[in-house]
Length: 536
Ligand code: XMP
Image 1 (cartoon, helix red, strand yellow):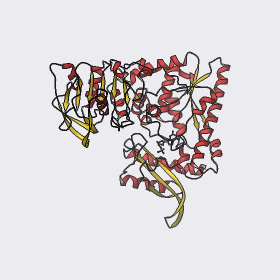
Image 2 (cartoon, helix red, strand yellow):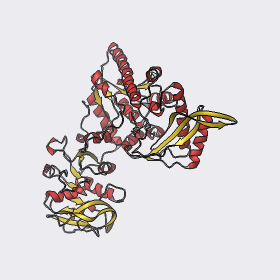
Image 3 (spheres, helix red, strand yellow):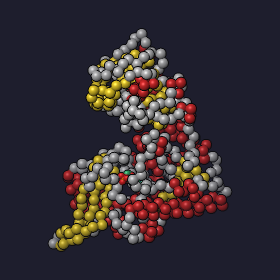
Image 4 (tube, helix red, strand yellow):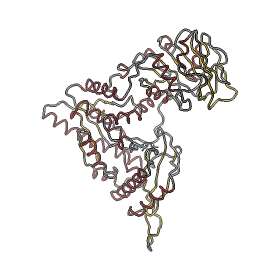
């Protein structure tokens, strides 16, 4: 798939982080960026000769493996020939030992938790103290390892030890190579950020200029170079943070040569189209077209019960509508002497990029996620992904700098197939109205209770079963609404949110009183896995 981006690492001093499969590798990347230094995560199997940039430093991550495991991953030795500073974290330290022929042994007990690091200074070799510079005495660190160094690492000096790990932090006596047994990237190592900053700024000499302000400036230049003076770009927007931020950036770069399309598929949230029109079109000044295709979508969904078929119908119909809109724009452009649409904007984020290049391989697809990949082949468009180097929190900061409202920046994610996968059974206009109304009440109440930001995602699900109730003196026989709210950092795993009873009580009584057709509300207490966040 062609991706039209210029290499970000040519614009910023870049640190290479090699991922050996630790659950904390993403965190190292985020922490380094938090101190203002751009870095990229690559699988540990990356051959240095194929690296698309010259790093100013390298960090080796932790790993679930032991260096002696038959299938243990090992670094390309060319890393050490780059002649840039190297920091090995946990397995990364053991890898330094393994490369140097030093013995690594299993700990008596796997060490997991807090430890106190005694910092050892070397006044005669002050460059070795730079990693722990400004840190003095005892430092609280977080350990999570099964192996450790059994003997001194030749050519290295101990710069920190704990009661159980005599070689918990080491520095090479000649070259800027360091190894640490603990994890500076986790919040349980409160001064870990200082250590990482010492490494990337002082030792690697990276300029700490990675901020969303400088990103905008450079990204706009980059988009203009890639798109050129006449070509046009099209992109779908949904009202979510990623597509809005990507669209605003595009609009800043090329004005109304960017065409944002909002397809009303009939399964969007209450007043969504009007809100998107007001925020993106009027407030943010994005060249936006709203296409009302609700009847088309609902017509195709008639009688369909199977979740995967619903997803496929919505995905394919979306492509159909989007392509015909693009054809209209192309025709109008030809008549007014403008260039053709050559690019498709997508709001891909860095975690998706990392996931697709992970050395463990991408995780299995559990559900068919809505994607517009089909558009590229059919329309011969090139992909443009201005957010592909950013984490979600960076996208939010970028959104704020671009003047996007806090409320939108912090919006919960919403799936492409919309409310259709929250209506179990057949999707009809009246079922959509019910779930839409209930969802609106749910979100309104959690916002009132100031819980919205604490919850990662909240929504309602309409079950196609009826149960008996009593309202006034009358028997009712009506449908059930499920309240689903979860806490998660990556949406791969999730816990159900422990909603306070008084809030549940208000939501339940409002939904039963205000939403016709509902006489029962239940709360979903399932974690992911084994359940998923959505019900279909
Ligand atoms: P599940 O249900 O797989 O959802 O645990 C994980 C996250 O993905 C969202 N989701 C989707 N997002 N298109 C999207 O853009 C989809 O088809 C889709 N399906 C699920 C879901 O809302 C949750 O945030």
